[in-house]
Each structure stands twice: as structure tokens, then as C-alpha cells.
Length: 362
Ligand code: ASP
Image (tube, rainbow, N blue to C red; front, side, top):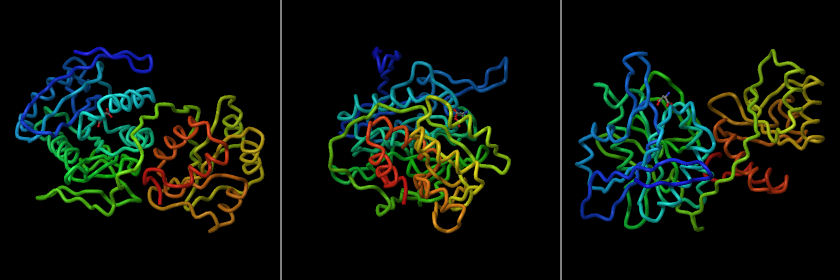
């Protein structure tokens, strides 16, 4: 058992080696919690996380994988609804600490906030040139009909897929129910189907059937720079979803919060918002008097911002709102958290925000 201290947050690392074979392929599996490792508490009947070592005992099939798999667990596995940005920092630091020793990383994570964590990690892991594959399950590993085993086994295979010394997937992905998706393109689309994740604006990176098929033209190239885990994150960002009953008082309270740095504005359709004077005046005031960064993304799952299509979209953009193009809410939020911690100029933040950094927008 190792004792580690990350960012002032203490926890234990359990290193459990479950298989050692004569191979250079080493995968690090990081267990954070989620349904995958939960059991039903007999008293309350609700699902609660259990010890990771028990989870591994439930997948004897892992013995068949021609890889050395080490595991690290959060001391207290969590339901992913409890994830906070410091958990993202912990994950980034664990990967950084073990980066040179492993060919790839598999992160077991609850599905509820997996798209947020995968998006955040995609930005924080700068110049990533190894696979970081998130997975989880809709049914616990002990359930007869569990989807956990296939998800874990194929994720390990993806994380260990190399052509010579080049990884096939040098990026952050989510593998769930036979599909590998780019992490920062995903959203949780179903709370009841095994097929829980969707990537509405970008096609899957791989499909698992009889063969594991990679679509290489959709996968990011290996970056040139040196890997670095960026662990600063600005947290004072709010997400505001427009709706027809939104009021001046509600929006005014938000822009007058003293600590607020950015607003992710989920607008209608291709980026449209009301042209009412009070609405545009408040947005203008937020940008000009309070230096708040405002991002326009669409509340539609599929599609993008087309600023000049309607007057209702053009007026908003003319005030100085940034174009979030086809970003998911999860990617827009975490990209802003990342960029605002870089202490760039306002112009630099806008320019970095509006271009793809990790394949998150097109
Ligand atoms: N509530 C669980 C979580 O996100 C659901 C899941 O694991 O799929 O941790």
C-alpha cells in the first residue's frame, strides 16, 4: 500500500498486481467508483460502492488478457454524482506519476458524470500520446446481466492496442456498449439502456463486434510536444440554459455574482436568443463592465452555432459572445475551466476557445 498526497488531498493507493507475464504491455486501471463496483445494501436497498479488490475477483476473464494490469483505487470509491474538480486533478496526477511506466490507462468511473471527467481530462492531459479510456456500466459487476465485463475487457484491449511503438488511440475516450467515443464529444444520453453514451457531432473512434475495428481517420494524431498534466482549473463558471420564462431578475443575479468568470449560455437551435432589450443589455453589461466570458452553445444535442442565420443569433454574437460551435456543454464548461486557469489575455482565451484543442469541436 502506498500513501500519496495530491494537491493537499490525501488518500491511499492500493497497488494490486493481478497478472504478471513476460510482456512489455502494461495497463494501469484506476477505479474511482460508480455502479460497476457497487452492491445492494441489504438494509436500505440502495446501491453503494464496495472494495475494488472484490471487483477484480469477479472478472476471472482478465487472466486471459495478454497484458500486465496494475490497479489503483480511490480510497473511498464514489458515486460519480459526487465528483468534484479535485477528483479530476487526482486522476491527472495519477496518470502523470505513472505515465512512463504504462502503455495505457483505463479509468473505471460512474456513468453519470463520466462525460464531464473525460472532457476535463482531455484538456488537462496536454500532449497526451497514450490511450486514456473511461468505462463503467449500467448494471453492477455482480449482476447476472451485467454490461461491466465486456466494457472493462474491451477497454483494456483498446488501451493496450499499439502498432509498433505507436498507440492506436492516443487520446481520452469513453468505451461503452461496443463503441469507443472521443471523451470530449460525449454526453450521457440514457439512464436505462446499456448504450448510455452518445457523441452526436462526431462519429465513433472504434466499434467492437466480432473484430475490434478502429476508424483511424477519426482518431487524433500523436502530438509533438512533451506530456504534461495541467492541474489548474477555474471553477467560477455557470451554465445557463435559456427557456421562454427566463427573467431579467434571474439573469441579473447571475451576472452580479461577484466571483463569476464565465457563463456557458445554452441557446436555442443554431445559437438563437431573445432580442428583448433587457436580455441583450444584461449580456452586454456582463461582457463590457464585468469582463465575464460568455459562450454560445446550442441546447440541441446535434448541430452547431450558425451565428448569422437569424437576427436572434447575430445580435448575441455582435455583443462579443464566443462561438462554441458544436461543443457539448461538458466540453464547453471544462475547456473554459482549463483555459481560464492559464492566465491568458481575453483575446487569447477567445481565440483558444474558438479553435479545436483536442478534437472537441469541428
Ligand atoms: N450513479 C452512478 C454513478 O455515476 C451511475 C453509474 O455508475 O452508471 O456513479
